[in-house]
Structures are given as C-alpha cells and as structure tokens.
Length: 128
Image (cartoon, rainbow, N blue to C red):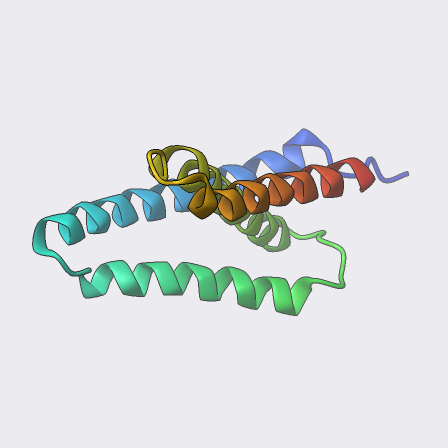
C-alpha cells in the first residue's frame, strides 16, 4: 500500500522552493532599495519579478488539473504556494501598515479586499 505524501517525500522539494523564494525575495528587496535610491527600477528587478510570476503561472497552468506526484511537481506547487503567501502578506502590509494616515475612504477597499483574500486562502486550506 502506498503511504501517500510523507515528510521524506515533501521536505526536499519544499526546502528547494523555499531557497528559491528567499533568494528571489532578497534580489527583489535589493532592487526595491535601488529603486528608492535612483527613482526607477533596475532591469534585473523587473526581469526577476516578471520571471518569477511567469514561471509560477506557467506551472499552475500546465499542472493545475493533475496530481502532484514527482519531486518537480511538488517543487512547483510549493513555489506557487509561497508566491501566493508573499502576495497575501504584501496586500495585508499595504492595506494595514503602508496606507496608515490616509483617509478611511481610501483605505476601506484595500482592507476589505485583503481580508477577503485571507479568507479565501484559509477556506481553500480547510476545504481540501
């Protein structure tokens, strides 16, 4: 009988996806700091951002309807999930921290939308 997805099967692909995500995030942070200093983003920043988004989107498009059984599938799934986590964290930070001091009329939609996004993510976790 197949034991399913054990920790031994999951740890390698998830660790590799985390390493890639942290490396990408560090490069994006450096690009962001350079953008603040120079006033415009560097080409590496833009290529990195759009490359990461394109890779995750392509993987999700090609593998959305099939089971993730190989190490590469698990790696792509973990990378996509970590990308979604970064997106959710950014929307929460933008809605609650970076927009502080603005009128409530400007903050209402981002706050509600970010809380809705968090609810959708938790609902998908609880229903699968």
